[in-house]
Length: 192
Ligand SMILES: Nc1ncnc2c1ncn2[C@@H]1O[C@H](COP(=O)(O)OP(=O)(O)O)[C@@H](O)[C@H]1O
Ligand SMILES: [Mg+2]
Image (cartoon, rainbow, N blue to C red; front, side):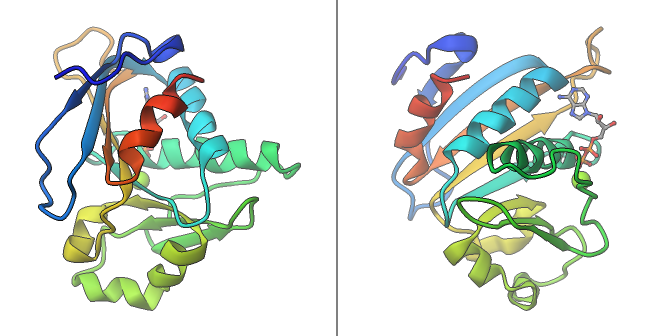
């Protein structure tokens, strides 16, 4: 079922109602697009950064090298511009530190990479509850959280495009909005 036609640069995204994987979540909107280059990822990250509120959770999914950290970097740097900070501030991958926190407005951005945690509960030691409550959370390898994953969230899924001539320079993108994010996504994408 086509729910709504997004306008603007993402107008040829299809927005469909898809069955939810989490029975606690009643709504899921999904947008897909292929051949998304770095500049478009940067634009999307900036729009989402502008729309982000304290308590927001954005999961970044996809395999190694899919572009998860790259998206987070664009998001964090865009917020630095919005808040008068240093847009060139380094945003390293939290592969080893597991989390990096950036002071931003309207809330600090917590950038997690949970690849190396072995139990979902290990995320408590990273103060993930505080992040969910007062911060803006960007989470790579969020599947490690299992049932601790909030039901209101936006998932940004990136995939390399094998067999495609543009594979080296673009990605397939899927945005999946769960819970409260479902109604926000269409409005946000109007601005892209
Ligand atoms: N949308 C994109 N199009 C083309 N190349 C990309 C895109 N996103 C990321 N890349 C490139 O892919 C490589 C791996 O990205 P990275 O963000 O480190 O992946 P991940 O965190 O998913 O392992 C980087 O060289 C980056 O420049
Ligand atoms: Mg990464």
